[in-house]
Length: 345
Image (cartoon, rainbow, N blue to C red; front, side, top):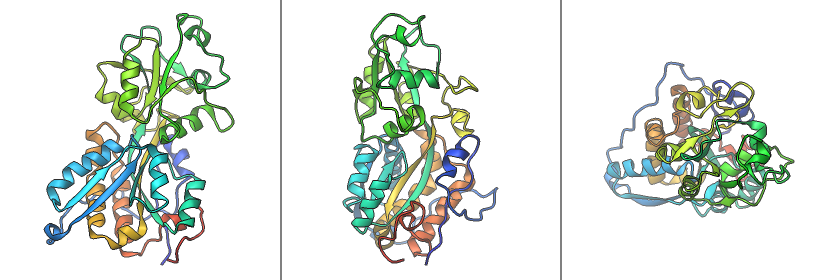
């Protein structure tokens, strides 16, 4: 069977971004709320091992879900790796893992590899995030930055070696930058939104796929600046300070409110998990984990510092999951991403 189900319209500035990825929406009552997880009677008899990998941004949500799920389904073991969105997709598109955490949509070349390897997949929205621009708590000279200044700072040809190159009122001290590595979906999204497609990112910065390393680097120097997901700022707010970003209507700091209503633009974004279609439809352990994940994602994403999906979007994702498990909803690899069918539906 083949019809597609996708996300409802988003709020504020997120609408334009997500509209490029949207597909035929499902009819859901606007006052609907996601259903709580109800374990099947035979949950104690369901066993298996599940591995997920990918985004360090989505990782905390998945890990929180894994921790809670263990108490419900002790026979199912779930492990989670943090190799960056690109690293997770590398494994996912060859069928090595059934679940990929992603802070950006799958890229065309990654989708093509999935087709080559006969890997169909579904994509589920799990939360919203705002990429946080941060400095050390000891930094006393940056009050805010414009998007244009942020682009100049991170551009390979921006000409910023010392802070005074960016703004004459800033100290004549070397710039120290920290950011995700090239396998990170955060790296891809930041560069696309801030620099654009034709501008090279500077390479003389301190990269890491581990956001905790970035936190430590920025916190350790008053001349450092970095970026990563909002949850990592929230967990380290005592040693870091947010830099408000002015897109022409600001400046705005990331917060639950500004991320949720889209005013923290252009650095608000959705977060996803991708699931192997064959594994989802054949493995009861994966089915129960995904049911639990989507029933719990609103509460747990908020617990770890992200913004929960609107209730109606959460209901859509749960309905989509039910149709995916039954085979009544076509995999996104056959529809949304614009790739040819990897397998007949």
